[in-house]
Image (cartoon, rainbow, N blue to C red; front, side, top):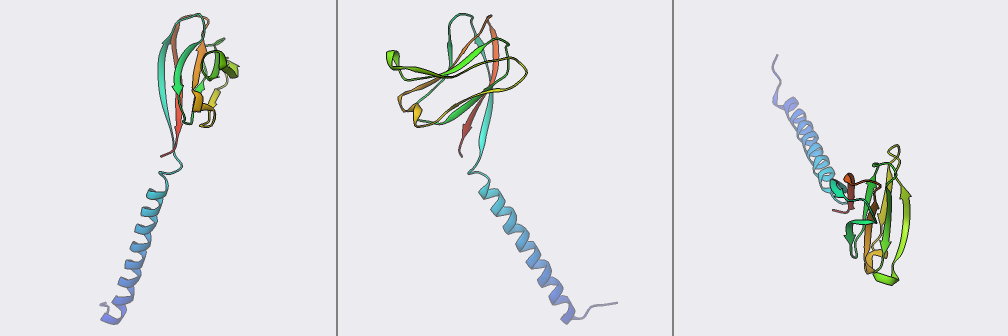
Length: 133
């Protein structure tokens, strides 16, 4: 059974339109996904016991951090410099739930530091989360 020329043209046209629609959908999904992306980088730092130690310093930017262990460790965000600094978002880690620190660009214009205080010296694994393209 052979098809004549009149019945082959609509089949080719439909196949061409389906391929074009698929290509445009794939192109738009690939280009649109880069704008609302957040990257999480897992970091490991050796932290000695004692006072609060700075893990990250931010200036005029937005970022977050996520912690889980060691148990009994305290985390906080310290805004500002010297006598004019303030501590916010103080939390204690328990190894059962994730604790998160967030810094916005408005508060980090004068400097912001993510800090941790551990009961015993050792490695701390945490995630540093940046937002944007």
